[in-house]
Length: 128
Image (tube, rainbow, N blue to C red; front, side, top):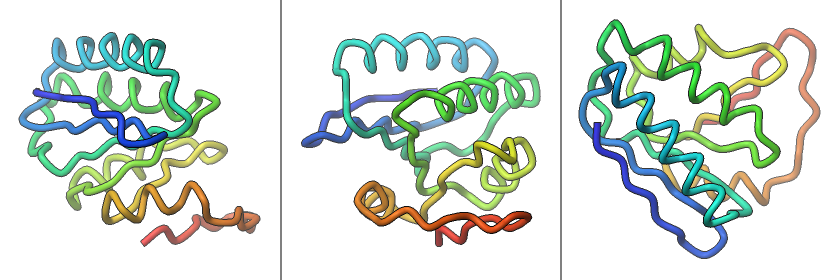
């Protein structure tokens, strides 16, 4: 997997491309932590537009890494997920900390400034 980061204003964007395997998921975690620590961003977006496949040995590790990022103070937004990845995210997300998924990077970025709508028990917010 290839991943690059870019700081665009106050938003740190991680662009993910290619295939994920177990080793690349661990490298991804380390590099993201280093970049977040170095950049100290106000907002984070993971753009999965170029991510095409996750090897079966890496699915759990990759989702575990993203769940860890989902629990930090700066809750990240996720965008451009394929149908398969969105199903995986929904299957693995925690009820108390669901993934914030958006169809585009611009929607994800705009959501940081959107008013917080209280969630109704037993329902997921509609982010698309």
